[in-house]
Image (cartoon, rainbow, N blue to C red; front, side):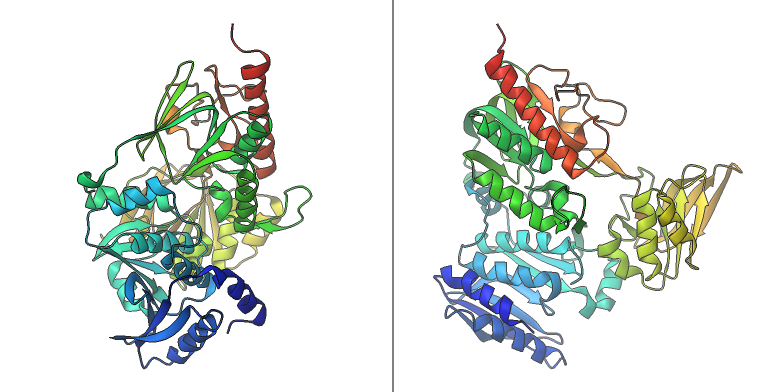
Length: 518
């Protein structure tokens, strides 16, 4: 199952293990039990510190618990952790030994303060690219919190349970039968959701922490933020990066073929390169944080959800953008239960079903083409009289027998039965009639919305929420700059964001050092 090259890589990865990790197998008569035992045996063979044992538990499906130095880690995989989740198993082994990429002390403190007991299940698909980030974040929480457990469940083994829970998108995090999170997210958002749901132990709180003064604070860790931080540091400016996650949306991008001089790369690989490049300079990285407050002054005051405080002479906002919602009734209620944003991750849930794609741009038509091979029918709804996608994509979609297009339409309401989506109400703008279609899934592909909410009211933004900047990335407030997808600069591309980030840092250097205020 695991080829020779990967086994050699695992030997290198596991060389740092100090404690004993046991892969405790659940007793099962499932016909794939042997496949799991073989895979775990191959993993264990790469290190003397890993062994395969027996959990003492039984189940109708394969599964494995992780134990560390004889104690339960709080981590369980139900199903076979292959595909994208194989990396989650490898990292879980490292994390159990307090190795690998771990959150910093402040984030670990927040995790430990969560009020337990908390028992989470994350339903995944092994083909989902977004699932591992959620699984790995919750596994870290389980390792460091003595009263939090996390079970990763391959939904393919539990079709009846998935249906009963109304799950129609992954990753789906549940506590008992209560939905905690659905779809793409990260450690910072998960931690906030758990704090809101379960509360925290105030007696363990360390309180806010002043992280010091900096020349430049970069908000965001995507291509624009990374470039800004690197250029600022190279100019000798004391620099800090505050980000929910390094890489931003790039981490969720599968294939990248238009980054000049790099014919092909993938999002996770590029993110790893960005992180290593940032880390090669004396740059303070505060990851898994969200900015909650910013005040203007000669020194900009920044406060994070971790209660940490940073003061900086200049700020570069590079917070990017996120998928734009429809903002219609029923959308939020059925997100993860029929409303989805990622066709690659959630498409398999709609095999043989009637679904709709909202949006006739390139992303919408590409989604329709991908989903046509899975779904029974795909209906594309476009607000304008004609599709906006490239002609080659439109021709391909229209050539598919199970794809149809409804142009000049306006979605009005997502309809459901309380458990899942059952239909969509929409307006035929040409006939001025309200109509309804019976569908079981809705994929929203109408573009991006800038992550600028935290700074609106302080700097000028346009009607789309983009931060208005001049040709040197200056905002309407002296000392606050912006770069990348969060700004009015056209064409939301990685290479453009990198250039804008570099420009913002150079402008900040020029304003701070070469021509400071009198």
